[in-house]
Image (cartoon, rainbow, N blue to C red):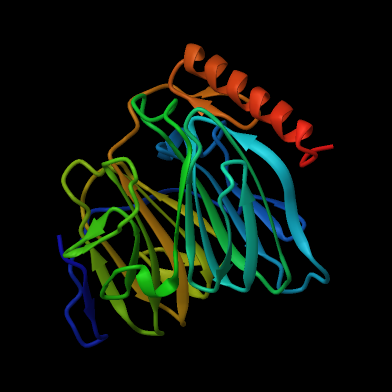
Length: 284
């Protein structure tokens, strides 16, 4: 599987992938909820949640308070700005533009974060497979210089060509941050069986072959055919492809699991951690 960049003079390759769904999500101030486990997440699981954050016009410090997760992993991609985060595992850090942070919640974790605008970011949730959904929580922060690239794609999770993400994510998931200049073309061939595919555009506009604009999420038909992109203007977007998640989603308020029994166990653990954080004075 190799990504290729081509100029406008290059012959267009026919590809068999079409857009079957698109959305601009639901706006909550500077945050756009593009995917939730109860709606679009059912179409593109294991990708079950996506927030687009754009505080370009916001004033003052922005963030989210302490809250829990279980059964999922989060991948935060900071495209512009600076954000500080902290987790109940005692892991904390500061993200700069281009950095990513993977937090595998497993059986349970709490986290919080804040930043000073302007901030542009995507936060993705991935539904964990049964063998990981009750495992101990862990995190992995990669600076922009530690993220491998294949052509215009930075490989956040999985692999493209010889570029392999160092993050210990579940198998069968690829997630890339892509930047194309106006007029640039890029063809991506997913591995065999990676039938889930979608994109979300942070800035600019592209054709694939239908136009997809800033602030839109587009879902491709279930196949592993190649996807071709052409930038109408300079564009930044994320692309997710994966082997379909084989389980029904069992949903809690902050949790996603493969079974009701696992959901009960995860919610029990995040309640326990919450009591511990209150005893330490972290939560009030």
